[in-house]
Length: 268
Image (cartoon, rainbow, N blue to C red; front, side):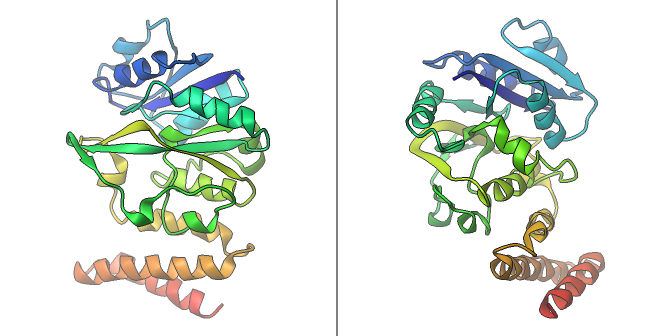
């Protein structure tokens, strides 16, 4: 079972080597580490381009979805593990995840629990953030419960359902996992095998305005599917959240778009 690791990065010269080291320190070695530098303007290129332990790819800034997709297309192996450049793996992550798949050959995607570190403080996950497993599409509809840095999947899954949506600047993982979970069983290791860091600059999930817009965009792909009733209810909930904030701040553009969307959904 050979694994290619895909690490997208953008202006994280101070973080990315730590992420790479966490891959190199695994108890079972991966076959390939691919770094896709999404047009960094700091010294990321100087830090990485002569690193013999990785395959370094530079591209013009096109977003994290494009960077991850580029890494997948360049990967020479059928199994793909993702790692964000500001996260780290614990040393037994790959060994334990490989064992899960070798013992369950029908499972083509898995994830693990994760340790959340925000400004050097461990954050306890809330009940609604607990990780799912099995055929669990509906469990992931309210919010994304699969961390990209925890995942290991077979490339055939992406060839089947499609890749990261390059039109989404955030929530691209939420969008992809929903498409995957419509068809595939999700394996899960109930162990904290990665550390996810937060609180530093350059984190899209914290800096993007009205992030529910992008979740709604992802959900709308499923309005005509098997779970259309549940999807419609979730979109209406997220529209209500957006409209509450928009009325508070008198954001007429959001009010216009999402009041219209609510009316359209109410009439279907």
